[in-house]
Length: 365
Image (cartoon, rainbow, N blue to C red; front, side):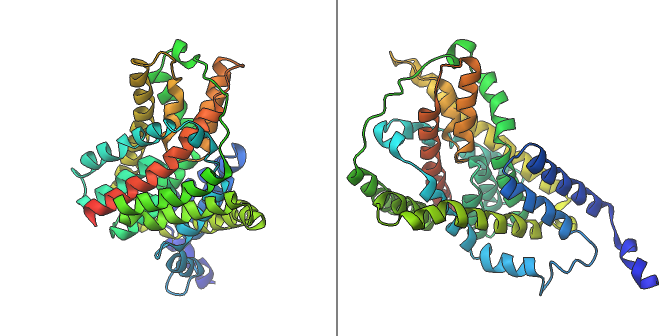
């Protein structure tokens, strides 16, 4: 009988904190449907690994095995990028190339946070933490692993959590930086036709250019663009649909529950973890602000004004950020359709965040 009750004596308050965090993630996934394929396995996994003597982790634990097989070697993030690439339609960007500028501008928070984080952490940890601002989980994981960051667990959780919390975080920032008049600006929704040849050449050219300027980004950019090439080539439709749905969802579930293997109470409940999460939020907010402020800056010189809200979609959280901006536009004016522009900026942000990650690696690896 004593053996049956022994586990209860090893419960710590830190474990209790992790149970609450796990329950909160599950609640957000079910009640508000915030990225349920990601937050639900993360939340359940956080509870799973914080039970005394949990058999899910350890030398022979299945979650530890999954972590070593899929995250420690960057395999899961790269495979997920194939699925994301297959989902992306680069048509809006190709028909309006200047949208790429907003994706670049929305990476401002990464480099600003790098400077701030370097005050508290070694430069490799600071660089990995800064990438959280792009709201791009796979890139954040890859950068943190290659830089041997000791803050990998907190970085993974923060990056994926902020991806899911885009609908809560971005609207207040956007409203704070824009006026009612600016949010009511309507944009031309006439899309130019993009040829199939252009759509096929684009992922190939982007991979080559990114590889020449940021060689360490080749794997991330290459897998993303390979997924898009499958979508656009016209001869791999079944594989493209599989990558968009089955593959992406399956890898996301594996990622979520495997990330949770690193959410062990003794490692996670520390003041430094809170600081990492706080700096990640800082980076995310400033990335959002960078895109909005860049659009406002351009409007000083443009006769045909841009709705500055679309600049906020320049982060990598695809397609959540694009949808958030579109919904905000409709709330201000039911006839203001910003989806084409916001998704175009969102797509450019996906590319820009990967290239930013590659540049970080070039600087500090």
